[in-house]
Amino acid sequence: MTEQELLRGCQQKDPRAQTALYERYRARLMGLCRRYARNLPEAEDMFQEGFTRIFQQLHTLEQADKFLHWMKRVMVNTAINLYHKNQKQGSETDYEAAWDYGSQEHMDILARISTDELLLLIEELPDGYRLVFNLYVIDGYTHPEIGEMLSISEGTSKSQLARAKLVLQKKLKLRGIVKYENS
Image 1 (cartoon, rainbow, N blue to C red):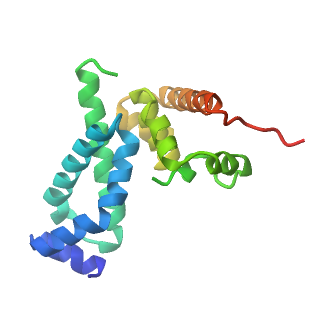
Image 2 (cartoon, rainbow, N blue to C red; image 1 turned 30 degrees about the vertical axis):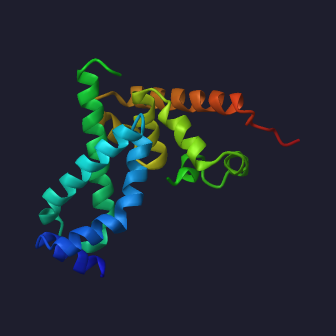
């Protein structure tokens, strides 16, 4: 089924198309949720809520070539809404992209740690750090965009990103994965 056929079928509420959509994008979108969540149960809740929103809002999407980007955006917005909800209550999968693109040093570090280990390190970050880290490093938003989405200043976004990177560096060092200088 092409993207266009999948989109049209889902917009017409065809159960086969809806199942195909879910199966095609489940792993990728769950991976996105895992990056933003504190733990697996929270990621599963986020994923479920996000997919519900996707099906509810699919009628607004016109271009099938924007399908995946649009679904990712819905999932990111779901993560941000959950963050705001938790903040009000008094609480604070392609990971190669999380490091400077093309940096041999970072590629060497990634070669020495599994994706699951890296995911766990990111999950352990405080909520604000994890959210800014994912939005900036993984999903490519700018600090002004992050500030607007999270209702924080651009400076706070930059500060939380810097702190997230420091925390991750310390955690990697504790695991014996340290930065090596080339002589």
